[in-house]
Image 1 (cartoon, rainbow, N blue to C red):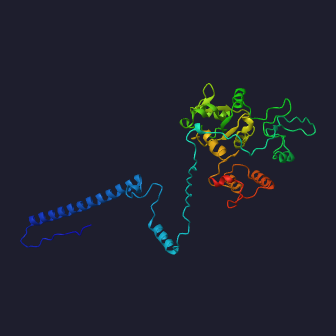
Image 2 (image 1 turned 60 degrees about the horizontal axis):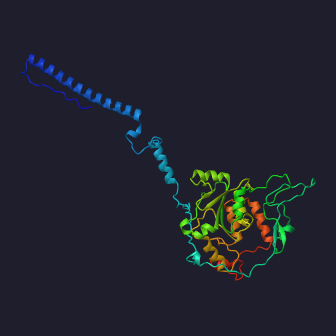
Length: 386
């Protein structure tokens, strides 16, 4: 490693003994230098061996902290290949579209309703002047024991197109309106109620009703402090549920008391649901409340996703009595046309698309036209208020 330095003694006055001693000293110096180079080489080899062992045992991550275990250290050759490939590929501007953000959901606020201050000021009008007196009866049983053309009993019965067309006319007649039973001995067609619940519902003259089927929602109780004592005493609050929903409500702490109430709601359990589709079953109490509450003069339907914050008698006074109307329905906050509703039902896959199209074509054959909000003769005058 280092150049060898050799000493030479020159002089004629040095004797033999001196020559012998100088030769011995020269050999000692050379031996010590040789041992020094050996120690240096020994430590160099030892350090190299230790480094090799560390790399073999702990890997490169001991020295390169930016490299993860699953990554490999590129060699010099691979780095050159990568750099060469990068130089050969032309750099183009990024053409990928940025991820689209969902549009923010619109905020909808309740419309302004000028309600009365108290139910004590409410006065029911005696004469509306818009009614036609006629008598309606309902088909309660279809008894057609035909062996050639047997029919399966069903909740809605087997109404013909001619019977359907005639049912739209205000005249004395008997029509199909659900709750149709088969012949004697046939099984029930569905929507069976307890006798005590039926007796309670027959006494209702003003009713607020809702339903939860298939445990699809949780129970929202009316705000009791905003309901007058008059309505608590004279208005029936009925919530229709199936057995599955009743079990879920009990687990959530909404167990009916001994009278069948949870807060203001009278819980009415429906057995033997007429349809497998829970949405279709929910249309029974929604559209056929006059069948479920035969003595009721006024009925308010409340969607299960809504909570009642207003006295029901004030709603009746504002929407019916004050405007001399017999029917009121809230306008949808975004969709006002059946065409739009059809597309939305398909997007959400609420029903079979073929069935939706068939029903939609049927409505158009009945004379349904597309809604035009600019038409002064639009069929929904409530659009002017909401």
